[in-house]
Length: 329
Image (cartoon, helix red, strand yellow):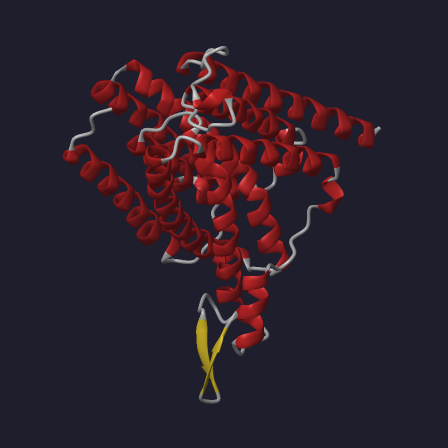
């Protein structure tokens, strides 16, 4: 896809405008969003992400638009899974609801920066080393298996501080309680951090793992750097609003891990097939490409992802409703 510099500038500008609207309109004044507010803004951000696909259609044609939509849906579904971790972190640190928007806003900015770096690093590796698709494919297969394990043991889903968070708490003097929305305060002349900063470190370090998962996944759908960046950016920008909208509904998505496992396994297969078509490894077919298995086209890929998400969501809601009726009875 031949992306003019003006489109890059306009896209980055739109992302910055959306972040500014978030900061000025919502985060600067601490408050707990109502369901109506969260719904309206979630719809708006999803709408912007979907409308951007029309820009891709106009600039690059139908095939690239389909790749964008498949990537956007995949990243959005992975973002919903990320919300599980955000909820666990917020609950673990007992973050006051009125300050949760600030934590999420900073977390999203960190995620955007990290994913942008990972995208360009990934693009450089993809263009230089065709064998990297084998690595991506096997990694996603391992991630799919991890999702299945998570689905099989839901009782194990609780947040445990990682090494970065523990180190921060151990090295820096920390207040016992939150001090409004501040990250650092002076207590008796001594500069101390607050639990708010610890939470942001926890969210930021979790974002690193999210980036490692999501970037190989979308490179399995498209290798166009512009589409990878746009799909990631627009899927992340509505994450704050989505958190407050579906935070209470996440428990009802009982089959989400199964759906994500299916999507990741499917993309893993796409990556491995593509790796075979680009094969340069001497111990595989003498270093020659393998074309025995045809690559999966963009349209079937989009259909598979949409069907998996639809079946997962409907089945989850039906199961949750059935369980509630059983409990009520």
